[in-house]
Image (cartoon, rainbow, N blue to C red; front, side, top):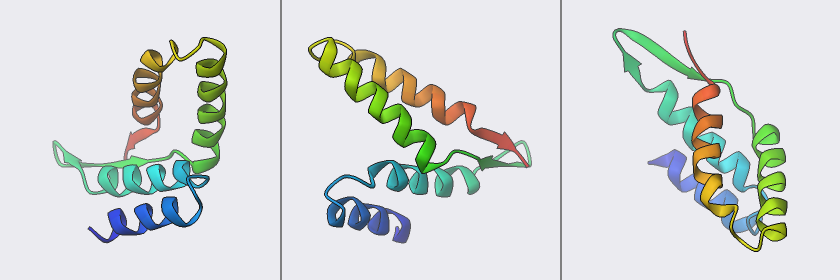
Length: 87
C-alpha cells in the first residue's frame, strides 16, 4: 500500500515525467514479493530503460496517429517479463 501511495505521489508531483520510475517501483515490489514453487522472483528492470521505451512508444503512437497504442500494452508486458528472474 505504501509503495502505491509513493508511486502515485511521484507521478503527481513530477507531472508524469517520473511515471516510468513509479511503474518500476510498483513492479519491483510486486515481483519481489512473489514466490513460485518456493523460489522468489526478482525484478531487474530500471526506470531509465522503461523511459527509453516509453519515448519510443510515444513517438510511434504520434507517427501512426494512435494506431500503435494497440501494441504498447503487449510490449510493456514483454518488457516486464523479460526483466524478471528467479533468485
